[in-house]
Image (cartoon, rainbow, N blue to C red):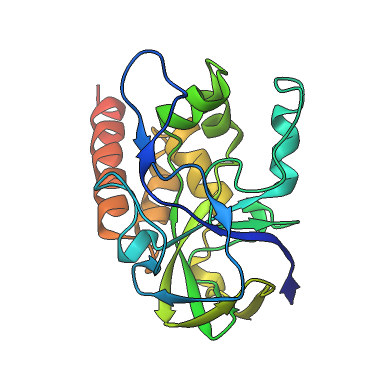
Amino acid sequence: MIYALNAIATGKVQDLPYSKKRPMRSALDKVKFKGEMYLTKTGFVEDEQEYKDHGGPDKAVCLYSKKNYRLWADDLSELPNYAMFGENLTAIDLDEQDVYFGNQYQLGEAILEVSEIREPCWKIQEKYQIKDLAKRMSQSCKTGFYFRVIQEGFVHETSNLKLIKTAEPETALSVHELNDIYYNDKFNITRLKYAINNPYLTEKRKAKLEKFLSRAEAKATK
């Protein structure tokens, strides 16, 4: 199955003017590249990240669906055409409910694997001046997600995503389900145990879920 992309974009870390409260350095403002760009294990060669929790092998490429932009249609007079939340890939129609950890997609010469959820941060909230943006995005489970790069290669500006491998059904965990557990149902012992057993989650994510599980079990015994 082919999933069309509205845009592939990269950005450089820069001082941004969106926050009046504190300095804001970020690569949030991304632009489309022309021609081809090489995609490495840590992301596109001309893409940058400011914080240690952004980027790296397990968060090499970020995707957000353009159909999720409609969530903010009542808050903004005009919606961006792409990279609204600093994502590298703006998909035309790819829902978090249909994307599973371990799914692999070909993008140009590269192969990507779904690896992490997106945790909305204060910077995107400041950019659009929507005070509860991060909370609403998290609770909606429409956060977007990250890929790790299984195979490096060149990606063309017109490349699209081709699904080449689906996650095993016995441990299948969608981005939407993990978001729902993480943001809305973190005391559900059964769901936490199931998520922790997913073989494709990052060690950091599993560690966070283990903490949630310990708290949930402690609460259940009171």
